[in-house]
Image 1 (cartoon, rainbow, N blue to C red):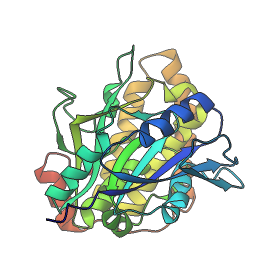
Image 2: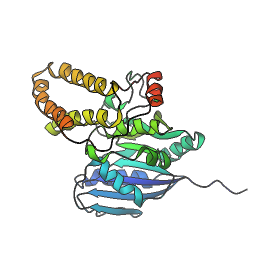
Image 3: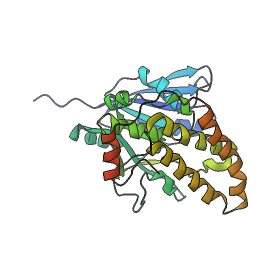
Image 4: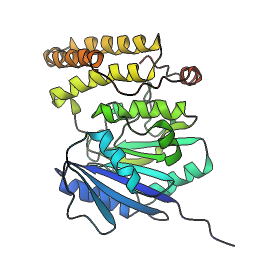
Amino acid sequence: MIPPARPQVGVVVLTQGTRPDDLDAALRSVLAQRAVDVDVVCVGNGWEPTGLPEGVRPLALPENLGIPAGRNAGVPHVRGDLLLFVDDDARLEGEDFLSRAAALFAADTDLGVVQPRVESPGETAPTRWIPRMRKGDPRRSSPAFSLWEGVLVARRAAFDAAGGWGDEFFYAHEGIELAWRVWDAGYEVWYRGDLACLHPAIDPARHDFYYRLNARNRVWLARRNLRWPFSWAYVATWTLVALLRGVRSSAGRRALRPWFAGWREGWRTGPGERRPLKWRTVLAMTRRGRPPVV
């Protein structure tokens, strides 16, 4: 009997070169994976990766293209029917992470993307990394219509059908669009609480650009992907959420200024390619309790 072929996984690790120790840990967690073959490229976003472990190829981008564009740049340079995306401050938990993920894809041809559970050693992982409205037990798996992007496994065919990451976003919310477009391409997206990765519990809201890009990209998400009335409802919902959160504290009120600057930018600037979700996709999302209005 011919033994089954080992899963082939193309791995894209993104870095700006500012966290060498974390990058090394991320790469070694990938290279330690058992029962799979990995083809690894380390993408330097405005940096030429050096000092990489054996088995990792560098890909230097001459400037920082942003997170989604940086990930996209690495995809043509790796082989495999599955793709693994890893940020340089994340790492895989366990040497069987990829073999278990590959088994999920082999068992379900409709599965397009998997996001693992995120653990923060010595800290409490933020609940925002659980991509569902009712967070509950982080170990419970469920369909997902948004994604935390730090570690993802994707079927290459689904990733290609979705059009990859949205380059224009630069930072924030590209995982929401990827999830929507994978569903729209006829695949499913799942959060798997039985797979784990590690990532520090950092606060992205420590910089003004977070608020600006957060708001701009919310508007762009609607303009790129939603039909009326969902486009207006989505923006209106998140505008109300921002206001309610902002008025609770002095820091929140200060954050409203860059947030609304980004909101205006989202309407005044071109969001890139528009690919409205099919009505059947909107219906499928609604049936699963996550209509595209929040």
